[in-house]
Image 1: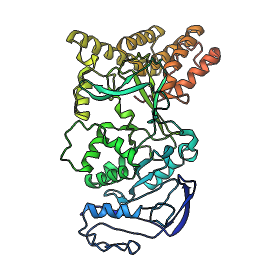
Image 2: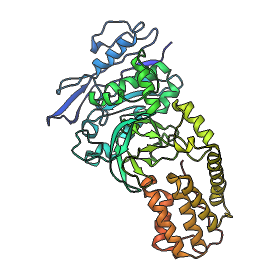
Image 3: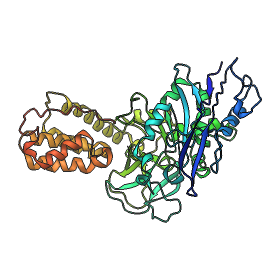
Amino acid sequence: MRSLLYFPLHVMTVVAHASGHGQNEVCAFNSLFVQHSSGGPEYAAELQLQPSLETADEDILRQLASDAISCRNGTLCDAPRVQNWTSSLPCIKGIFSDEEICVFTDSNFAQGRGISLVTTPARAQFIASQPAFTSSALIKNVNPDRAHTIPANYKMKEIPGKGMGLEAIRHMKQGQLIMANTPSLMIDYRSFEWLPLQDHQLLQTMAVEYLPEAHQAAIMQLSTHDDVTDMPKDEIISKITSTNSFDITPHREDLEQDYKLFTLFPDIARLNHDCRPNAAYRFDHATMTQKIHALRDILPGEELTLSYTNPSVSRRERQDRLKRLWGFQCGCKSCTQNERRGKESDDRVAQINSLKPKFTDYPSTATAAMAELLINLSRQEGLWETIYLPYTYAALKYNSIGESSMAVKHAHMAMQYGLPLVGNEHSYMIEMATLVDKPSEHWSWRTSLGQSINVVIEE
């Protein structure tokens, strides 16, 4: 028996946000309950639909959803508007939970770019309370300009052996913002856990289909790493999302901390992988924006790259993970160097991993000299995404022995590399800003043990 598919609505009237013509759209919520399971109700009276849902196929269910969300030109519609959503159905009740997973779409989000969520009503309500939804000016012009009225930092082109990618067309400095993207699709991990694959794919496909047509087209052009010529659309979209999406950690005030959001950004998805990338990403919950910053200076003609996996593991571990999860053999310089250089690289990574815990364990046995070694190893290995950590350790160690000038110097470097990647609210960045301001009043001043900061660093 398949799980339950609901279109739950309540009788009420709501004024939605303004349409493109400056008129407010007014939609009424009509009561509707559709249950898809053997022995359940066959149809909702308001829709005047006749087919039995006991034998309804996916096309009928999809048409039900399509009919129910038809709300155009201020006419009466069956689509519920919860917060900013232009549609918030269908809903499927999970096998292992009484909660429902629904599709929530705001086709007006980000100047008509649109956004779709596959999540619970409670989480959708929380996300809709973020400033990006309540103050649209925050994300005005944040996405790549498709009309090219604003000069871009890059161009899209065919990259040998990789397909489409992005290439820098101007010099960019370390820390510079390269691009930003609001999400197209955010999928709650509970959808994967609670729903059968077929139901999950159905919601995922509907979430894409509810987006504006231009946005849908951008998604469907993304890579799948497979031949999808004869594949059903549900499976194609599933391949696209699994190949191109990012895990987004929930907002600190989100009550569902155990469930990440699998999130698709079509423009950012064009950045290919490199085990030693020149760019990195950070998601800003307030603006619902994934921001890409330069990890180091980037020259015109360089391909812009991200790391799809943890760079601080051995070459074999990286290659195995990339092959297993993304289906490709990594051809970056770090992975294709000769055996001797590859072993030297693995040895540096192993040494880095053995040194790091010495700075976070309490009491700490690390020294400033060990912090300098960690910095040098990270620079040699090109681990720019995490180099703010050894600079932070060095600043604290120098301050713990009363060398304020060296402490401030390293704190500045920690912030230079760290702020674009973790933001100014990160515990380490707060500590570094405090240390720079008044090193002798910082808790680490002349403390021979150099107490550790109890903060979890997400890699």
